[in-house]
Length: 124
Image (cartoon, rainbow, N blue to C red):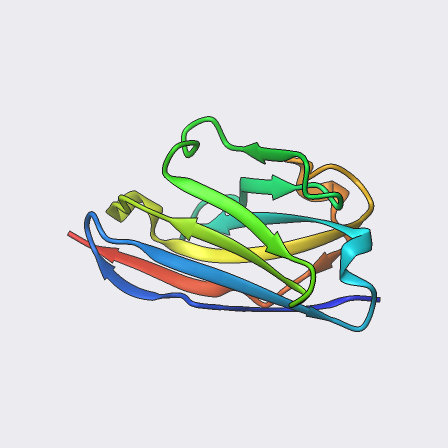
């Protein structure tokens, strides 16, 4: 099965940008739809963005569309999350997740494979 490793998190100022990466290994990456989720301290995990295994369909949390962009590079076995205009409410651990085939579901229950997460902290 696929293994996932996130990177690119860190500390950024209010209004700044970050690009998260999630590198996959262990299986054919192009068979998997991918999702990004986040969990702030004391909160439940929430959907951020998803992308289909074909790359033709993307899905975003309503509150984040326009600031965040998900993309994938199958040649590099990597999915990305570009985050712009960050604010302190975006502070969370960000996780990538994989599901065989699929369309980029917003439900965490649809994903079987998860990375360990990367911390994003936005200072005011």
